[in-house]
Length: 262
Image 1 (cartoon, rainbow, N blue to C red):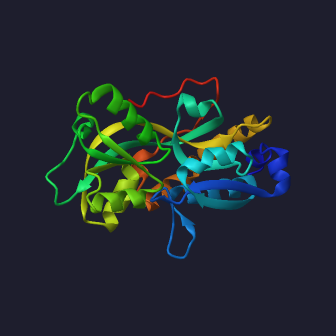
Image 2 (cartoon, rainbow, N blue to C red):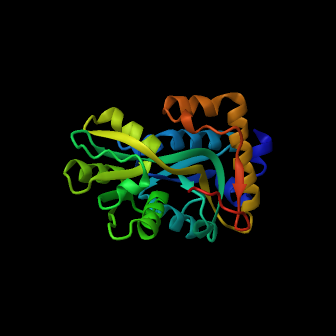
């Protein structure tokens, strides 16, 4: 679509390639399949963006906590990590929100422990994804609300490692986005899902450069075009992430007030 392609900064347009970072272990958002190929909602959305921008899409899977440093160093143009938009992150990168999520709790299916509220995590071993919003929110809740019965929090490099720790009884629960939990539960009947914690807009992270205002607008317009023509809904339905659909995309920059996820 020419209107969107024309907004892409010249340095990206002239390269012919949109360089995209995705997590390597956060199905159904993004993961690597048995053939070593990145798959998931964010991968399909990135490819749809590239089509509208007239660009080849180069997708690089990696650990979640490596993506924003990769943007800052110029390794990537965008990161499709479904980021929660926080003041700390807005200090270094910008965002375009086009989905929403919330966190839930996974516990072993054969365990009587079934937390429904964040307060019920206190006193237990809890696993979170390193660098994720859940890591920050669980740590904050632990400090403010668990008092003399603190959680023991383990941060893992990917979701698979956290579920392995749960199954081996090294932790009592995993806290992560509802989508990854639903996807894991479809493949693994050894745990159950309960509760809800926080939630709100999630976003694509965009490298903050001198010319990124047009790139933010291009991504926003791409989201809205994909919503209007049905591609957005089809991608979400395929990956069973349509519970997080939003009607329009929103830009967040360093001057924006971050959403409240409490």
